[in-house]
Image (cartoon, rainbow, N blue to C red; front, side):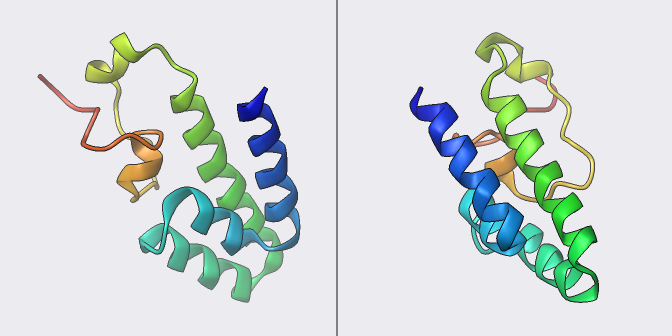
Length: 95
């Protein structure tokens, strides 16, 4: 239930301020600055990028941990925190 509540809060934050939603899941990295630029250039592209990052983050967070070794990196995502669904270290690639 706590995961669902945090996901809903993150979606509501992203609806109003897309870069803040990206900052909360990826930190102050390349994905955040790309989202700031997209939001400045057009509010709608900022939303698309933010919701894509959130989808990748929560999709990988809900996957089976046994499949992490075979998981390919998501295209267009530069943050290891989003790629690894909040866990430290690289969890994708070859063994």
